[in-house]
Image (tube, rainbow, N blue to C red; front, side, top):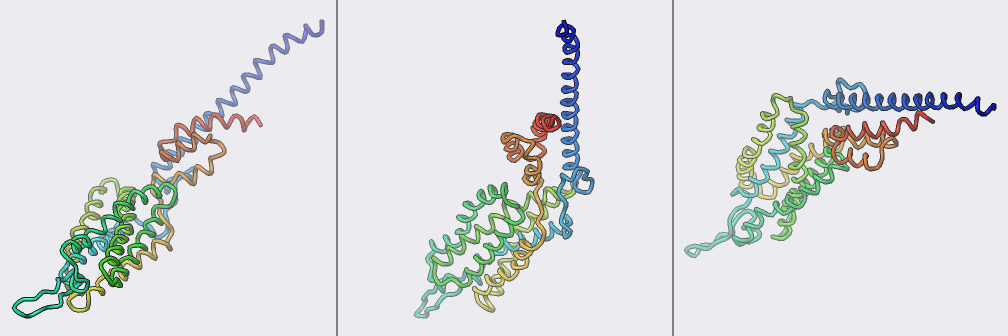
Length: 311
């Protein structure tokens, strides 16, 4: 009889407990959604308006105009090298004999006695390194800081151009030219996205135009620079001068606090929220970026937070 009397009370208590659990789940899901909305707002508004700490802080040295100037100079130096290798003062000419008078030639062609084919290979050898290394640097940017990767590439470029000045035959300078392309690949792959991320919205196209204007400007300056240095000093000095001019930017690439690309700032935050996300959701946020993975974050947090609150 007592058991029968307790049954209605237990039956009445069960729905109340279920309602309480459902209420906690709804509350946790709402909190997860609010957190995701805050994350999106932080990403869109930038670090100045950050409320969740999710947006990255910009380094103290950084202003968008400083970044543009620095990248324009680096881009120009890259293409100065293209003009240098083709200039008369550096490329030179082969030795020849005419009317019983022989000349020893000048520049790289004269020192290494290059054929027309070898001269053509030398001028285009950098493309081998550029084509091979560009997708590699682009892939590495997913797991390593892109700004630091630019610094690594500039270091390779600086060493390779100095090596061109120290080369002793056709094959040694050809290998150095390939390495120049490897070093240039990191900058070509990653510099434009940095400018696109940080340029004012109304001036993005103008800033990118200024960046790409450095290509023909650099080549033209390279012809002049190579002709002057090669004619008055030696063709090797032209390459050494390039290395010296690039060296300060190499040092900056390793010393100053690096910038982050917007699409790659998620790695640090995925670690912080990792315990709340399943491996599949972590992969989604890692592959697509924080903003694209927000729906998955909401779903994952909504599922995981009730479990934590019930503990």
